[in-house]
Amino acid sequence: MAPAFRHVAIAFFVIMLGSTLPTPLYPLYQLQLGFSNATITVIYAVYAGGVLTALLLFGRISDVIGRRRTLLPGIACAALSAGAFLVADHIAWLVVGRILSGLSAGLFTGTATATLVDLAGRERADRATLIATVANMTGLGAGPLVSGLLVTIAPRPLLVPYAAHLVMLAIVVIGVWRMPEPVAALGRPRLTVTLPTVPPEVRATFVRSAIAGFAGFAVLGLFAAVAPAILRGVFELTEPAIIGGAVCAIFVASAAGQIFGVRPLGSAALPVGCGVLTVGALLLAAGLATGSRALLVGALLIAGAGQGVSFRAGLGAINAKAPANMRGEIASTFFFVLYIAISLPVIGAGVAADRYGLRAAGVGFSFGVAALAATALIALLRAGAPKTQ
Image 1 (tube, rainbow, N blue to C red):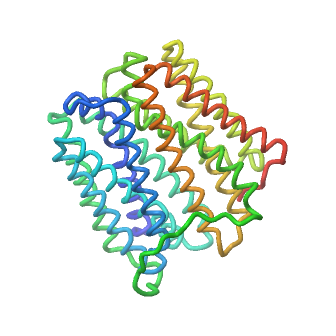
Image 2: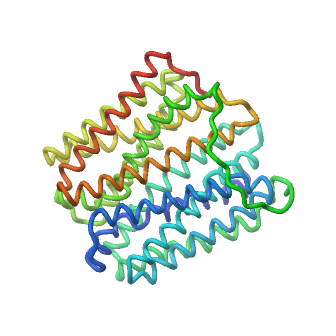
Image 3: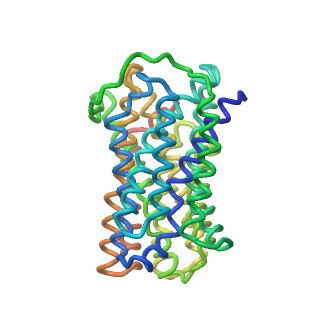
């Protein structure tokens, strides 16, 4: 593996780690700044707004100005996000930090994946895509775990995690700066809005895959946003390291599902993923209703694995149907749907938690996810499972 490939993969991991770093810290901010559970979900959801803005405005920019010149601003946005959290003494700073983090992830996700494929070469494109997926999901999982551990063992819990992230960013920016540019710049960038697009011949496959993806990412969004409140209020788990580990578990299970579940299942991967996600969501509802920690752990692992399988299989099915000259555009539309899933439903769950309580809101949310995943499963069984790449 070439050094440049390793540097970009590590940078991708570090960027995604930063996007979930605040998760175990929200209860501390809540105590210090005094805001509701609904506010926590809004603070989390503006991250998705930053990602969507980046996808709409800058989705094609790396093809125009080059990969490195797109990755470096992504790292800069992540550093500015960490800086905003370091000085946060008001909710506004948390919102600014989350928006900047979303812009960073939006700039990095597609560009880093494309860069890894470019650096690996066409004959190793599948392996490069898999490594990009692993870097993405394990980075998202590592963020809460790292901050949860640092809060437990280090002083200044609202400062040390972000200072550590700035050090990581300072290290990875060197590798990205020195990497060879894999594509030729085509000219100066123009600020244009890239609207979500799905041609008629892809729509049926897209809708089924998007419903499953929406359900899976809604679960990830719930745990990345209000997991600390749920784990404290329902399961009486208060240690930041445990909270971080629980959130980490669902992302690691997702990565494992993508790595080990899709290829052996073949064309059955998408319906199987939807079925597993349905079971995981129902287990989550049961765990929340009873306060059972064993059911919670099972739900995290099963829902995470189902999300990972259905996500990768759904994206593969869309890629298999999409015209070659529109594949990137259609994939961006898919991600657009997924990032809506980690914002709007999660805000709804936060509002419901303030009104009806964490347990009732969590149970209702879980049943909603189960219904969506089951709907996608039924549609797939009726239509016949699409082939994946």
